[in-house]
Amino acid sequence: MVGILAAALLVLVLAGLVAWAMSVPQTSVTGPAGWRLPPRERARQQSALAAARWTVGHDEVDGVTRVLLQRTCIGLDGRPEVLEERVFDSFPAHDPLWEARFTEAMANARFRARYLNTEEGHPEQP
Image 1 (spheres, one colour):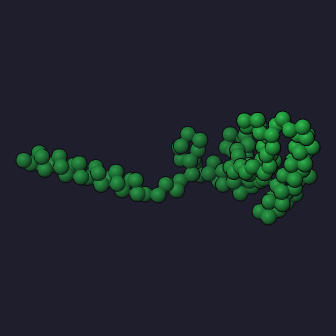
Image 2 (cartoon, helix red, strand yellow):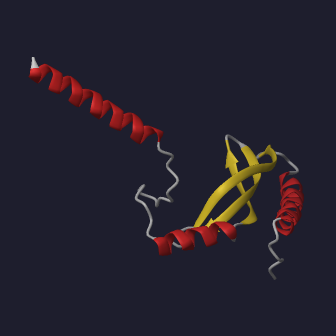
Image 3 (cartoon, rainbow, N blue to C red):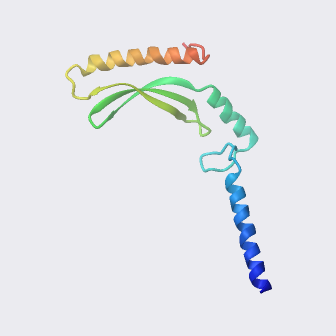
């Protein structure tokens, strides 16, 4: 009888611990593998996020050319990391006027990226 009560108490305690662990907010900054970052790398990541800028990119998906606005920063591994991506314009990749449409869309996207960077307080870079 005492063994059954002890087992039931143990199960209740473990269930309580699991419920508590699930309810605690996860506010720590983690790295690529999910590990908590040391303070120096957390500071580097936060400064990189603060310096994130809007850039222009393009790709082709399912026969459609997309001109993209991408908010990027330099990741902890030193490579660019895309934080946010928006489709600025899209048109068929086999459009006879593809070159003109692409050139105009890229110019307009660059203008929009400069505007967004100015709005966020990032000075124009030469």
